[in-house]
Picture 1 (spheres, rainbow, N blue to C red):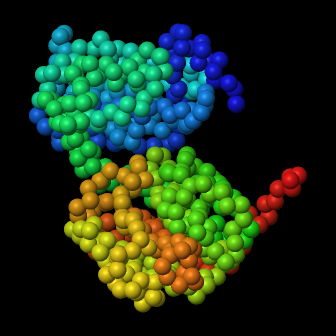
Picture 2: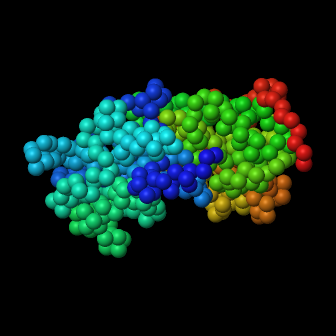
Picture 3: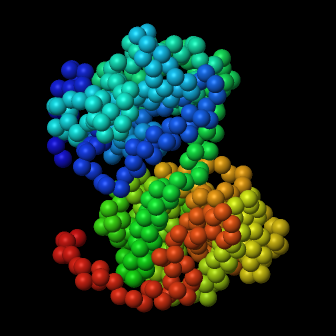
Length: 485
């Protein structure tokens, strides 16, 4: 990798340092359309209270170490409303038309990083203001360096809606960067963090209500979003199925992770929607185990694989748990089939008008009764940590996407993911120790009736998993030279 420090030194002194997600005009053809983003801004505007403005900031650039940053990922709300994928930007959506001193009107403004030939040589093409107007059709676009002098009287609004700041944005020392935009907004809006901490709706500042509006918007998926999520889920399921065919005792957790993510890339997935979880044996009992470091998986173990491809910004979330040697033991099958039974019942009950709380109760009742029958707990009412997490969450631009959690509504896409985790040392017979099972699927809530199971390309019944694992894998012919140890 070229040392970007050289560029940093040059551009810091010119005030032009910036790291961009390249956003060329000839990118993927199935990105969300400009009309989608414009429609979402209009719907948001219709929900805003009178005489208000909603303020959104782009995601900050995150440093990995030294002069290397993590790959930039736009704030999902910002992308949802604009399609803009670069850093150091600010969006304002006004409830009513605003009038400039010379009589022009506008109801939204976006401030973006300006074009910079030298920076773009290193970090990719920037849209700039003209590109934002032409490619994203956001006509009131200005350089981020203009925000400081732009005449916006924030005190005249009854409500300024925004997400409160976490104070974890670095100052790149480039004029108009995200650090500057936040600092300038705070000054213009008379922001006081200490006051807001005690009173989140201080004066005309409202750091609470915007989340509710965005939950309403993003929780119900538009048809184009459903299509992109289908693609992400299909890719993730094919990854699971290919691993079922390819897995062998002695492989490492990281090798298995690599097979999944190779499949993702073959289908055009840009990223993983979250850090991949691949836990064999007792590692599966760690709910968010992401080290994936075990060098050799044991033939007698289960392996829990929770991975999701991100496609055009939308992420899947699919988990399968399989026997490394291709055959469930008696105890493994008992736990697996119990989780499957709880999941299937919860899926059947996931319908428009049904509360999320109700389906959680359905799954927990089945699991508690099953654990009691197996002798793992002493009574169905015994408190335990064998099923320690929730059952469902929205998926979309975030793996735990924004949305309401009261009652299910048509065109919500949610997961259903019961699990049982029995760590070593648990207060039950040792034969159960180290068994960890989670089955997670993505479903689309329909107007009426049973939901649509989106993740059916990866088998989830124990018998079908064993059948899939008997099939040959194209990776059997893929071998690499031995390295000196």
